[in-house]
Image (cartoon, rainbow, N blue to C red; front, side, top):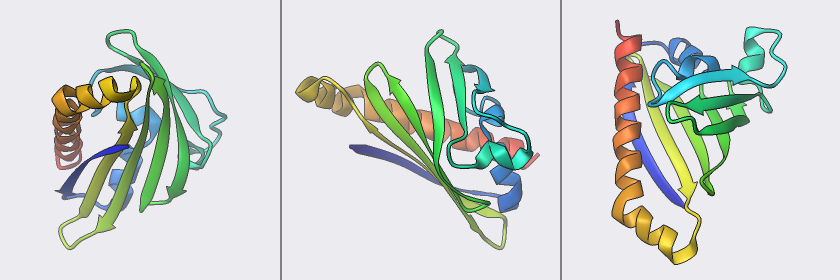
Length: 148
């Protein structure tokens, strides 16, 4: 399992950051998402963040996958697992820590490439750098949205 992580401070409260982590808001700042729709029952705003909440996403290149929340602690931590994309499994984690200036956000993705040794080779050669670049860009976009 490989982990890519970005730590960033955002001048916004943990509650404001938390709101942007809902599946229906992530396409505003996550790269390449064309649409995201809940597939679990969402009757209240809190339902968007409960363990088991799930959504179906379509990327710009027509790739489709599902997210499912596996861990949730309001305004502090949320973890979601993604159905395999091209055989790769992913878990995304957000940790929110209040600071004097706003919120320290840890954005981490743990993933495992398929294809055995070939997958590990691709990861070292290309995939890890791509994930680092995407996560860094997404964190900066989230920051710019919240600090407007």
